[in-house]
Length: 507
Ligand code: AMP
Ligand code: MG
Image (cartoon, rainbow, N blue to C red; front, side, top):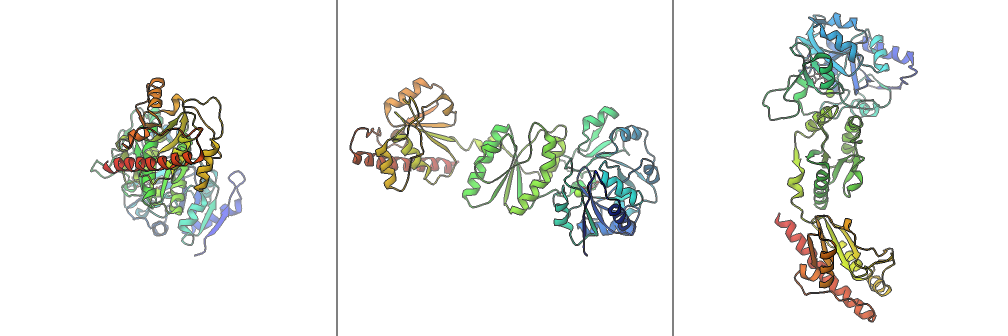
């Protein structure tokens, strides 16, 4: 089947295109269209055969009911029975919008559409293209998300095409969606009404109208052995191809943990994706790092979630690690989808960060113009099992200078360079509680301990690797002494890497 793809500007809707799409639906065909939540795969909701086609195109299990989309409030009375009074208050407040309500169905809604249930899910979307299409199609459009079952929901027309090109009649491309996660589902057949799927209309917003609202217990945990009440929620959908893990804990701790795992996995040859935020993104160093949005506004996280999962599919990463989000407001919907995408695989950040004692190694010398930068240069070249921030600092640096010329001549003879380096004085912020401070001389160690009492791990380099006492300064000596310093440092730094790797292996 050739899929017609047409761009539609929601602010200047091409009526001919909508008419054409409406005709396709009336004749039992399938049209994907944008809504404010995600793209939907539209069919005539009152046509049993059209429902069958929907399931087929998506590869969706047929016990997973479809949501019927309407454009007029009266349409609700045509398809639902026993509509409770508070429905009108909810409809006035949240329709058109991202709220789906479940009612007893009327006979004219086929079981094909409701997955064999005696209830029907109804929503009035707010997207202008969606509303125009529903009208053009006769008023009742069933629409699950327009993705292949099991893949992340589509938030732009290209996602729909990736999954359904050739399997459906038409795609209306109305650009990116606004919300990015599926509608809130509220079961109106029980008292109090129960949230079966969290979305942009939050529990707090519903409580504001209804007073009391129940929540399906299975939404965030998988420990509950009960099946979720919305049939669709039991499937492992929203899922990327890679194994996704959510790292829980304080944000700073989660970042450390993800960095640590990403380094390790990359070293072992796996490709790793990282779901970061604009606040944390710059702290990551390895892996395919993507910002999902800002923690200041979790709606931005909802908007980008599925697109990012799809991008990782395209990059064919093998593991994805994601920071966790607060379970409040739209964050509840985000965490619900993330948890399902991860198959409920979570990691506790501190149980991982515990496994790395040092994250930073600072080599301290007198003026930071020879031994320190040389040691840092050599250490960075070592094969390390864990990731370290490596730097050198001096105890007496009055202003930044290039390194000593003889020191540079020696490293140059080894095809290395320190030419771009500027000497830097040791400052309090260089020493975090996971910093290993390694000085060249005993006297420098004492000086660091006096000036920076917060420094917990201060040793001379030879002392730490149990090989000698000091690395003497070659300053003022002939070039050959600089060469000897280089060789001594090379030996000690190799031992340092072995020692740190040994400790990492023990964990
Ligand atoms: P989708 O919009 O494609 O992600 O899927 C529609 C969701 O609505 C699925 O999770 C369905 O299980 C749920 N749903 C639709 N109709 C009903 C219903 N009558 N009772 C409970 N859940 C429903
Ligand atoms: Mg879906």
